[in-house]
Amino acid sequence: MAHARYTLLQRLIHWVVAIIVIGVLAGGLTLGTYGFDGLKNAYGIEVTNFVYKYHKTFGVIILALMTFRLLVRLTQGKPDYDPPISRFEASASKAVHALLYAALLVQPVLGWLATAAGGFPVEFFNSKLPGLIGKDKALSETLYDIHGSVGWLIIALLVLHLGGAMRHWLINRDTVMTRMSLF
Ligand code: HEM
Image (tube, rainbow, N blue to C red; front, side):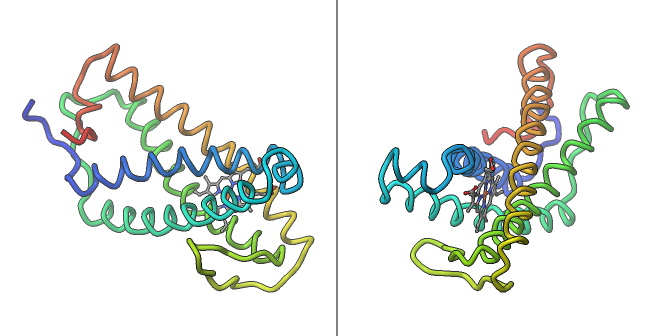
């Protein structure tokens, strides 16, 4: 197995981001489905505050990790496919990867600004980050709507991403999956 792989740093960030994104999506979908009052009535205020706080906190962590990851990707590049993949697959995976980077960078900013415009705290663990914009209820609602749509876009991209990875791993049984595997 002497084919080229992503660097250890790139492979580590990939899996850390993957785990955090799954958790943040699960929390976000819970918030979007129940809303503040619904969640509070169903599970109580402590659970509700916990889900909000850690959705925001780990969303901001994704923003930091993805910014760092983009810089690493731009400086360290990516390995060539060995054996090469078809031109169609190369374009399709490039588009999905680029959209995942863009969506995972934009989504936390939307959540941050929607929260601040709603007059709510941008929590980061037990502290608060600056809101960056003033209170504006109408703007907040628009930003939350876009935040919800981008959430579904991320889910659709992850389905494509996972589908491609699984096909290479389990059906083609080629070297694509091990380019990103940790060991
Ligand atoms: C990559 C990072 C993030 C992802 C993938 C994500 C995803 C989501 C999703 C899917 C929803 C449900 C939307 C709906 O169904 O209407 C949601 C809701 C929410 N997000 Fe995020 N989010 C991220 C980052 C953030 C950040 C950084 C903040 C704030 C600092 C934030 C604040 C919120 C809030 C307050 C809600 C609940 C909105 C409501 O009550 O309707 N999110 N998020």
